[in-house]
Amino acid sequence: MKDNRGIEINYQFKFKLSKEEAPKLGRCIATIVLFFFTNIISVIAGIIFFIQLDNYTAYNILCFAFILSFSIGFMALAIFFIHKYILITVMQSGYKHITPFFKTISAFMAEQYTTDEKFQEKINNTLDFRDIYDKNATWIIRKALGFFVDHLPFVDFIKNLSPAVNGKDAQAVSESIYSQMDDYIVNKLFSNNNMKVFFILYPINIVVNIVLLYLL
Image 1 (cartoon, rainbow, N blue to C red):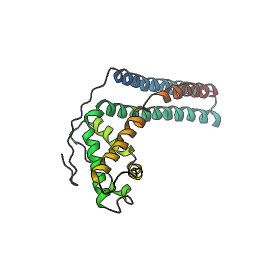
Image 2 (cartoon, rainbow, N blue to C red; image 1 turned 90 degrees about the horizontal axis):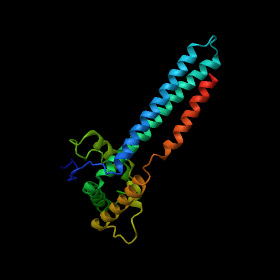
Image 3 (tube, rainbow, N blue to C red; image 1 turned 90 degrees about the vertical axis):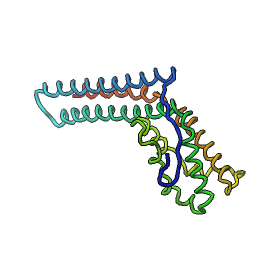
Image 4 (tube, rainbow, N blue to C red; image 1 turned 60 degrees about the vertical axis):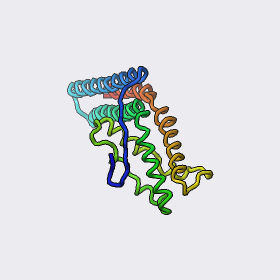
């Protein structure tokens, strides 16, 4: 495929979870269900306690508002982290099949860098690769690719070019950019993709809900 800037992308995304990744995604889905169940129960209990009060005071109304706010807030946080976890997991499962995608981006950046002396100054305004991946791909794949493109520090890749790299050699620049990009994806985005935050967030969620219900 080719976009209006002449960037040609040839790749076939194959989404297949490994034996290690499938249980992780299952636990991910179970976690979001658990978060929703816990907070929905908290909201229902809060409503029941609230309507059974003999007198409504500013204190009780404030506590009830906190119950609703914190429950919605914790569910929103869960969705945010789960969404990120799923997108990275999807990309990780098919990463080896779409290296041409990232190599093409690297080649495009190298071409611009070696032919435009002001490219490094305007890099933030010139780089937008979100529209070059296959529009016929499934929603989750397009979201995963878009997420990665949005989170790759392209400016740093240019700034961190080794002094040994000839700034006029597009091939050498492209290889350096791709090497940095691959290292960032594998050793930062992939390696930091875990559910540790939920082991911290969920107990806090429960404690906050219980305390607010007690105060109500």
